[in-house]
Image 1 (tube, helix red, strand yellow):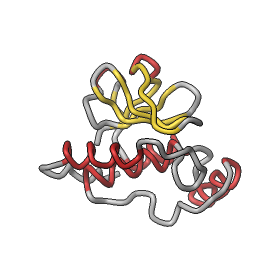
Image 2 (cartoon, rainbow, N blue to C red; image 1 turned 180 degrees about the vertical axis):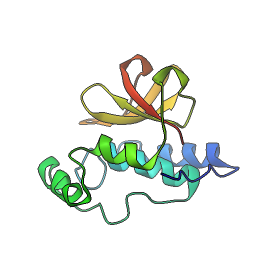
Image 3 (cartoon, helix red, strand yellow; image 1 turned 135 degrees about the horizontal axis):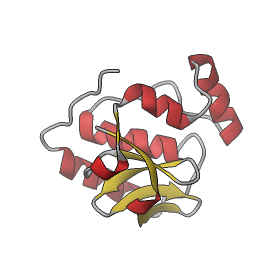
Image 4 (cartoon, rainbow, N blue to C red; image 1 turned 135 degrees about the vertical axis):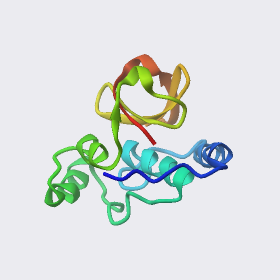
Length: 133
């Protein structure tokens, strides 16, 4: 597992990415919790961890895409990409697993996540796991 470093201008890049998502609906294979997180990491590091994983139309189809890679969930896949840390050590820009197997991006006491209504902000206290970016 070799994490790619954040770019020097990662904060405005992440802000621009989040701004682009305002009002966009949740869609498996386009804007779901995993691809939201991957997109945020692309904005921060320039590296696309999700290459080859997009385009599915349901949760089951997405899980079938990662099963041949040896993973049964998108969180397991994330754990293979980024070093795991305690949720209490997460800092802005780190990836969080949130209750319900959704993923988000840490932003202080809150986290950005994508739910059925699109981009949302949730309490960081929902964090189950965290990964350093």
